[in-house]
Image (cartoon, rainbow, N blue to C red):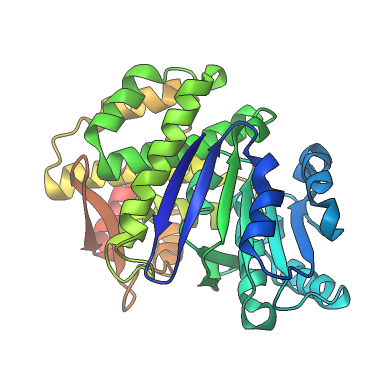
Length: 356
């Protein structure tokens, strides 16, 4: 097991990573909270069937309440958010209660926003069940979606802890492994050339990741995320670099319909596009064609789905949170490990999208 301390301006907390770490949750709750009144577990239909019976017995002292959301991005709607708050009210949660998010990134985002909103903020704990959540469970960004934009309604609300039990990842389908591992690759590209070279050399097939490879990849990714979050909790500066690949990725997700294209696979297309822009705009010497060949070998799609229009994608990118005054700002790379924000014109982006 590894314990990684996340330090932000508002709070410090631990991420516990390893096999079997959820067995420590009961002890943590008893030690961390005085007079804990109620526990609300928020999960989704898929995860609940597989993992609830591993968690609930550990919390029998508090007779936890369960709220089950739809699976995937369908959890992140106003209606589901409202229903979760209603369950909290009906079961008389109060400011000495805690919410546990058992699931992937969507469940973590929903749970954190419920926790941030209920009684103006109560504690919550992340219990991730996907590789993707090594990124989303750390850093305190919580949100739901709007038809006009992904994660546009939310808050910054840091968890009390993250229990990242690697045994819960054993049931992931290959598509979810790909989705999550895209964020691992992102962390390497924006921060650590050596980590990227290790990934490119050692990771050739995502369906046969060893326990050691997974542990190394996830702990390294979490530590890299902390390097940005600890210096810029509210994304007023360098934390925006964590959105590498996300500007186009979010636009693809929105245009495809949330839940019809996984987050990480959309972000991978966004990263391939951003690397080509980095070659074009900043003279990045990194060979993006080699990168594309590697990730295609891992099973990633690297082209924009053919039925999506460049004009519609540009319109969605202009609604991105990093955009300012209607101009699109992309995270690009000057070199591996050296990201920068670059404002790009509509005309240039349309041309690049059509060529891509």
